[in-house]
Amino acid sequence: MTSMTSAAGKKSEKKFTTLPSVTQAAKEKKKTEDDDPIKRAQRHVDSVWFDGFIGVVITLSAASIGLELSLEIEGKSTLGCTIFENFALLVYIAELGYRFYAFRLAALKDDWVKFDVFLVVLGIVCSWIVDPISWMNPNDDGTGPL
Image 1: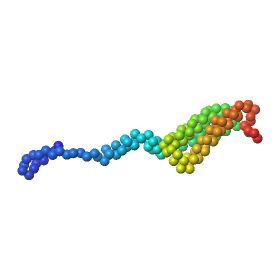
Image 2: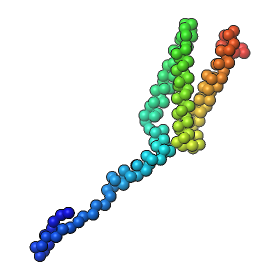
Image 3: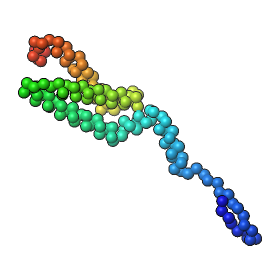
Image 4: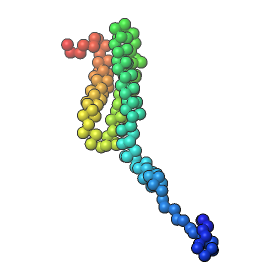
């Protein structure tokens, strides 16, 4: 309350009502958006840190493939590279799952997501189906039916 002096010289008390501020309204809107897990997931998927993290995994995966080829040529164990490749494949599957959770089938409107789906399916087939079958045949030299 503030005191004011009227023209007659009497002090009067005047009450000011406070209106919700613009920042308070923005906070309420953000709180509502934060409560919606789909909108939160959409913000995560579209964020720079998400793309950066996936980029780091892709880079490390490429380095792992190069290292694995070098180790194979030298006749050394590639178990560590294989473990990392499986971990990277799990990260890619989680990334796609999170994208589909956030955007549903609309995620497939992005050509890069379509390409990611193709690569993940190819990775699953090669790493988790074809490779284990080839490991069952100890006489296999890696050339397959050629």
